[in-house]
Each structure stands twice: as C-alpha cells, then as structure tokens.
Length: 133
Picture 1 (cartoon, rainbow, N blue to C red):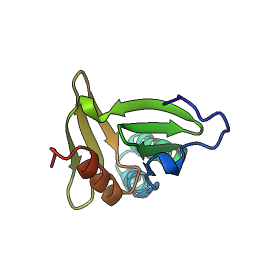
Picture 2 (picture 1 turned 180 degrees about the vertical axis):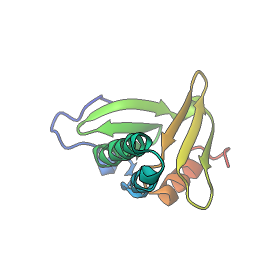
Picture 3 (picture 1 turned 45 degrees about the vertical axis):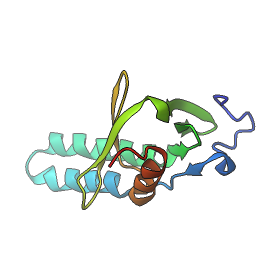
C-alpha cells in the first residue's frame, strides 16, 4: 500500500470502507468548555480550544478499513497503517455514547477520540478483528 494516492483524492472507497465523520464528541467538548465558563474561564478556554481542535481533526482525518489494515488518512496521505495481524484487542469506551476508541497492537497501545460513525466503526472492527468483543 502506497503512502499517498498521488492524485490528491484521498482514500479510495473501492479499497475498503471509509468511515463517515461525526462531530458529536468535539461538539460535546466545546459545550463542556462553554459550561465551564462560570467556574474558570481559563479551564473553559482550554477545553473549548481542545474541542475546536477535535472538530477540525474530525473533518481532516479519515479512517479506512482495508482487507489487511486500518489506515489513517489526512488528505491524500496515509499517516499510519495498523495491520490487523498485529492487533491484540480493542474496545469502544462508554457504551451508550462511544467517545473513546482503544486498541492494542503487539508493541503499542492507542487511544483515539471517536470522531467517526461509531456504529460503522464497531461493525468494521467486528468484521476485521473477529476474535474481539
């Protein structure tokens, strides 16, 4: 798998499912920041800026499930490739409203905010890493 498509088009849906972005977690963090205004303006500003950062990331980054790896795209470039063969486990945290995606590879642990369609994410994880929950 090449690290970029060369034509500037980003992930090719013919090579695997590309998850749709969902801004709910970033928007929730922004609302939390606004709610903190009465308590501490500095904390509110920090939380709000973090929410804005997550909102931008939800529009820039894409996750693609290919036949052999989870790819993280930014524009037309693959930032990281996570081969399924190296995965040891995964979990979506907070069942009713998934906000954090954890997965472990043989040599590293990853935590990602759920910036994508959580239902599709869970379906693809179950499909590609069938031994997991």
